Amino acid sequence: MRPMTCRPLAILGALTLVSTVAATACHDATSPDGADNARVVGSLNLDELPGGCVHRLKLETVTNAAGDNNHIPVIVAKGTQDGPVLALIAAVHGNELNGVPLIFRVLQTLNVETLRGTVVTVPVANMEGYNRHQRGFLDGRDLNRLFPGKTGGDSSKSYARVVFEKIVSKADVAIDLHTASVGNANSLYVRVDMTNDACRSLAELQTAQIIVHSTPATGSLRAAATAKGIPTVVVEIGDPSRINSQMVGEAVDGIWNVLTAFRMIGDKAAVVRHRKGVTVCKRSFWIFSDKGGFLTVRPQVNTWVSKGEVVAELRDLYGSLVKTFIADDDAIVVGRSMDPVCAAGCRVIHLGTTRGEFLQGANDGHA
Image (cartoon, rainbow, N blue to C red; front, side):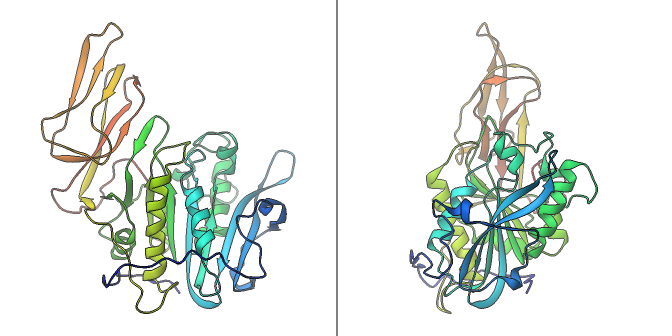
């Protein structure tokens, strides 16, 4: 099934989450010997996998220079009853890792004996970037500008095609898990096209601090999946190359909301838990520096700034003030630079505003 609309359930009370590790004859998805017991597969055939099980798989992707197959770790939790397929994709950027423990936490508490449908998880989609502690693929290119990829294309496009066709295309709904890029910090926020009803509903189920209206960038996983009729949002969780445990825990609650709203878990009386005080931004924008110097950004993420307020300053290496950066509207800080070393063209601060309407073609350069 592929639900094109998925309005959140009414708030009838708090959803009680039961932390029950699936008790089946299948392997525990997060046991220490998980990689050793993972089964190598050339394709992901969900219909052939037994229900009531958690399946650890090594999915073949493309061959390397030695002629050996590379693999992606895939963990599939398949329920005992029919239902939607939810895909959780982490680390499309190889150093954006908060999605990894999120997936582990979901699987540790998901009871496949009562699950309706299937949860397909990819802890690390960009294995080449992950192994190199870098954002991009083997050749340094951004995979999230190359989807749905190209069969017979260069290495990055070929890899993106495999990820999309073998995994993402199997989903009825997808969540793409990211963090800030190197040198920056993010709030816990969702990036979504709010003019798409199905995607908007999916975003509203997340327990984010901020929701940012943004139409997907060409070549992003979100754009390719949405074009195929798979409602998809990006969830940004904190900072790169480190684990923000509190944000991860809050983001996990959003996944439980999705499972509940799609009737994959719980009974008919189960309800979603919405976060109070979510800020919905009609647009967002980065302020960039047109000069180089030593950068100090004043506000923290998820705080408000006023129109005309100084949000950052740049000094030369003799201490003289080179430039001040001013907020041109009342706005919330979605993300910010954490790196004081600032060359011309570097990002300074990401601001979101609640004024205006949800516009078509609203894109701040993200996915």
